[in-house]
Amino acid sequence: MTSITISHTDKIVSYTAHKLLPNPYQEIKHHFSKSVGFIHIIPSIDYEGICRVLITPTEVHEYLQFRELLITAYEQETRPLPEQAIVGQFLTGDINAEPSITYCQYLSRLDGRYKDWDILNIIHKFGDKITDPVASNDYYKVIIEVAKLKRNDLIGFKKRFELSIEKAKKNELVLPYRIVVPRTGCGFVFIPLCQNAKTHKSIALKNLTLAHKYEQKLTKCVGISFVSDGGGFFCIDWCFMEFEWKYSQMIEEKLKNNFPFREVTSELLPTYYFNSNQI
Image (tube, rainbow, N blue to C red):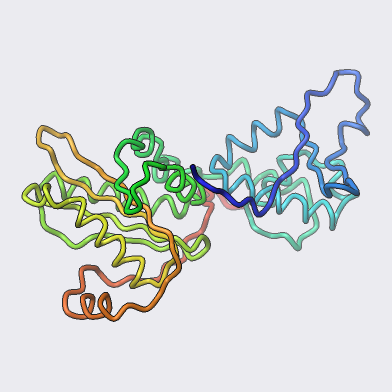
């Protein structure tokens, strides 16, 4: 059974307003409770729109944090604004600017690029393909780490996943692909394997996941191996490791004598893109 520590809870009241509800009450965006603190008050139609635009759990959570800060700093200015203006300001990342109806245009001009980062078809069915070094079939920790990714993280994830599929399909021997998400402290390593390595795929998956975790000094790492079964089908296995990093002379020597990876380079990608129309 997975043990999960909740570090922050977003408190939301979502409602459908009666048509006779006076406008001043429909403009209420929050309530501050002495017992639980800030509570978001969002009409259900607006909350559905938020989830449709932001989609990933991390982005929704970050929006609610942004919304709380903005409303706390500009309570009177945000009160008459539609939710779309607050979402648009969130997309720009400008928490210090005074809220304005003009931020709605950022929402209308958002270029979602969903095909670049949508990985629903990748993670839809993989729970039975976990290779766990601690002999547990619990795959929720993998789901949690993937759920923490924002769309710019998911672009890198999907790109390397699909590239690994391509290399495995060609039965091509290549070095693993990998990424690290400093914000979450988790690494991901994508391991295309040739068909003749199929019988050793579990060992390769565990060893390379550990190597990536160690080399990048991470506490968490997800490994994914790919082997072609022929006929367009693939065997894809997942592995999750989580424990404190400790120096190991044995691993140091193995990495020094036979480094199995490409070098990691740093890249800062914007979270949101807007279409080419000038804003």
